[in-house]
Every structure is written in structure tokens, then in C-alpha cells.
Image (cartoon, rainbow, N blue to C red; front, top):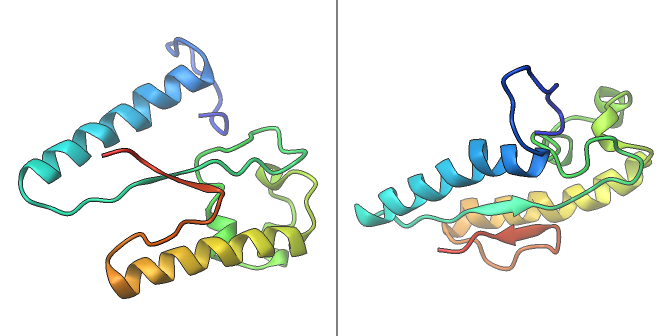
Length: 118
């Protein structure tokens, strides 16, 4: 939630709002899907680019997966990292997503991804 301006009706810290708007609904969806026989995997991205005012925020995975240095050169969520550092982290993320697409299982996750408990 750190990438979104706090509104007048928002209550609680960024962590509390993140749990309320993302983690709890996703945990509930995960449980409901599993209850109906689906195989479900989830992860949380804990990557916090140095110098970023947002930390590990919603959408920070997008430059790790898509785009170029030119496309993301002014993105505040990437802080003061050089593109070579962003791309190095992105290689791990892209490898994890590609492995999932190939096998249907999460396989080993890079350190920046945390598997969500079942």
C-alpha cells in the first residue's frame, strides 16, 4: 500500500492496510480454491530496492518482469538502483515464473520471493 496515497478513510499503518486489502483476501481465496480441489501456490515479493520511498510495494515486480531501462528510468519504486542491479534481480524472478509456467509448480524460489503458507 505504500505506493498509494493514504485516503481520508484509510485506517492503520501501511502494513495493516496491506494485510487487510491484499493478504487476508488472498489467503481466503487460496483456502476456498483448495477446498474445491484446486492446486494453489502463492508468494510474496519482499524485494526492497535501496533508496525507494516505497519499499516492497505493489507492482514493484513489473520492472523485474517487463520493460527496459528506458521504460523504468524514472520509476521512484526502484529507488537509486542501477538497471544492472534491477535486471539481476529480475533474472531470478523471470526464472521462477518461467519454471512455474513449464511445470505448474513453484519449484525453488529466489530469496526475494517468500512462499505463502498453505
